[in-house]
Length: 84
Image (tube, rainbow, N blue to C red):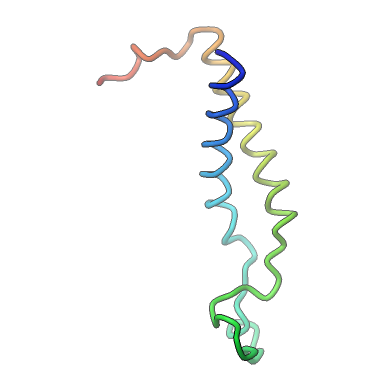
């Protein structure tokens, strides 16, 4: 596997994991009993904690990619493994 294809696979895994992690701990002002400020979306989270979510996403994506890389380099999974 080349660096470019490995990076592309990691990038795709990272985005999928990010969309799974984004809702964790997100609370709208309505859920917390606060009033929505003018100009803000009522569904916008009060404290999104994006840096923390990016770090969690990177760690989880790294683990998933590590398992994929191990399976791919040891030829435990190949394209022929999938019924296409």
